[in-house]
Image 1 (tube, rainbow, N blue to C red):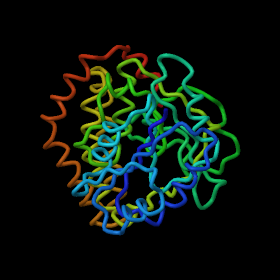
Image 2: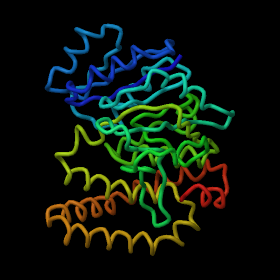
Image 3: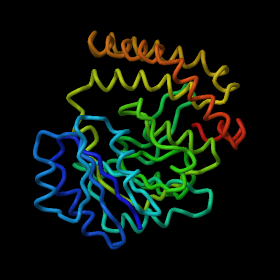
Length: 311
């Protein structure tokens, strides 16, 4: 069975297309767990009235993405756990194709091809990667889909907006880091998963459509602050020591360039949000170092392997 975990915060307008696309799947052995972060838009009532088969978890405040999906995972029963954003619509073969991506015992997760919801000729995400200078990115984002990412392959990680995992991965690697609240928590998890010897398989035949930023695009400053804060923790926790030391100068140069672009090409408020996030990340370094000790003690792969999957 697949346990489909859908986090939600004031996303009522997106739910019908998401839920209906799941009902229309060719693969029927699934459960849906809808974790609501204390929405004020009647998301819960809409779900209860129209989709009684869905299991509801009602949280008493907005806990963020990481905590919401963790609650869903802890209350799920399936051998596989599919995380799905509320602003997605799935192709009818989506579940079937996601399951088919588990090609080996070491495959811990499967990534799909996410297309833009409004313009379905455009790619939203064809797998998550980290650039050499340390910045996470969604492969293919905003590119026209001409089949350039139609090859099955092992990649760094899956966007948790539409990703499936073996349950055993959570048992061994742990859950999503709730200190991230939102943004890069999936990249952090993919890194931890890779360090413990699990791989991520990209299946381009598994397709869904995503309204990227539909619930957060009015909060750019908030998003920027969290991204900058979480990026420091992501690096400190996961990079093998030799890689971290070698690439540290590039990390600093990349931040300087990014902040200069915020200041000259955007607004002072966005620049201030970025600096605020970076300083918050620095303040949390002791916590990140504590987590690093545990993560690195369980590492099963070489530094050379990690180098090979970070593009």
